[in-house]
Image (cartoon, rainbow, N blue to C red; front, side, top):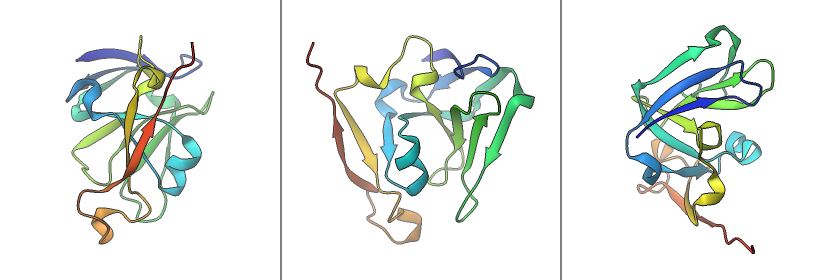
Amino acid sequence: MKLNGQCHCGAVRFTADLTDGLASARRCDCSLCTMRGAVAVSAALDGLTITQGADNLTLYQFNTRVAEHYFCKTCGIYTHHRRRSNPNEYGVNLACLEGQSPWQLPEITVNDGQQHPNDGGPPNGVAGILRYEAYR
């Protein structure tokens, strides 16, 4: 599943070839992801191409400094990150992808980032399920 994406202001544009389409959609409960609130989907490292504005991306790392979180310098939107749990993949912000919205998914797995599997947390790495039910 190959989709175009961009940050909120359009300064950063990219294409993402999603490894498992929307089936890889997930959230994480680590401190950064909890505040950021994004839903990520997976793309292989060679499955994400920045087509415009690579120089407008800024990198943020914390704690183990393995994961690389990228944000637009202009609008501040998180576009993608190199995953700690699988450094051979990017997590791509689903809401940045053309025609996609996290609100279209009734359930999203929440990964355990507070007790990360790489740090001895649960082997399945799952903290819970986030459910969305539309009222309209």
